[in-house]
Length: 343
Image 1 (cartoon, rainbow, N blue to C red):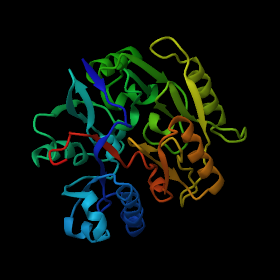
Image 2 (tube, rainbow, N blue to C red):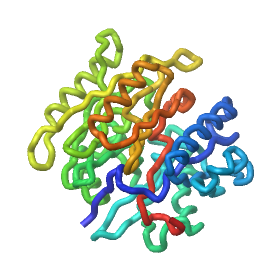
Image 3 (cartoon, rainbow, N blue to C red):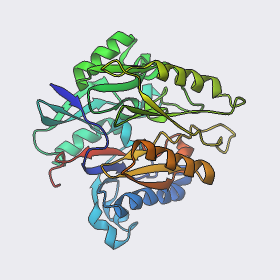
Image 4 (cartoon, rainbow, N blue to C red):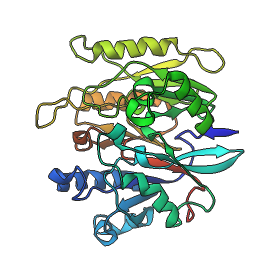
C-alpha cells in the first residue's frame, strides 16, 4: 500500500538550489542571490534545516551569518535551474516504509534545458544524502512536484493541462493519468482541475499556483474579484469546478479563497504569474510569498490561518522569484523526517 505524504508532516530538511551564472538568473544574478539568501535565512531562522545545492560550497557558505550555518547543509552539484519543487524527490510510503522517488523531469514539457536537473536526485543518492535503500528510480515517467498536491489521506489534486500535456508522457487521457497517479503515488481519489491557468505560467497550470489541499477537508484556492482582470473568467470556472468536487467519502470540500495579487509585470511588460497559493507549509510554520503589496500580502497571510490555525505564518518577499515565473513553493521541496542519512 503506497501513500503520497502531505507537506505538513515533520521534515528533515527543505531542498533549495542557489542561482549561478549558468542559470536563467544570470542577467540579475546579484539580485537573485539576495532573494535566495533571504529565503534560506527565513527557513533557518525558524529552525527549518536547509539542504542547499550550490556550485561552490565555500562561496555559498560565505553568504550566511555563521550562526545560521548549523541549519544549512551544502551539497556541491551541477544543475540547470533552481526550481527544486519540480525536479526534487517526491516522497511516499510503501507498506509503511519511506521511499524517495526520482521521477523524470524534462523542463516542463521540453520548454527549457533540464539535463542536469534530471540527474540531481541520482547524484544526491550517489553522495549518500538519502537514507540507504530509500531511493527509487522512476525517471521513465515525467512528474513534477508542483503539479500534484495531497491531503495525505489518499486524495491527490492535479490539473488536466499539465498531467495530460503531450510533451511530458505523450497524450495521456484523464483516465490514464489517474491510473498513473494511483500506481505510482498510491492515490485512491484523484481530482482534476480543468480551469485556472494563470497568465505567464509556463508550467501548463501547476496546481501549486492555483489550489492547495489542507487538513480538515479544506482546499485553499486563488480567487479573482476584479471582473476586468483577464484571468477573472478562468478563475471563476475553476472555483465553480471546486464547488463540485467531492472527497473520498462523497462530501464537498470547505473552500477558502486566497486573494489574487495585483498584476505584476516584467521588464518587457509581460504579466507574471504571481499567486499566494505558492506557499510552503512545514509541521509548524507556513512560509507565505509576499510581493510588496501590503494589504494583499497581509490578507493572504490571515487567510491561510483558517486552514492552519496553529501554524506560525512567516511572509517572505518573493518579488525577485516571480521575475522567473516562479515563487516560494516552486523553489523548495520538503524532505520528510528520516529521508536523509545525516538527520
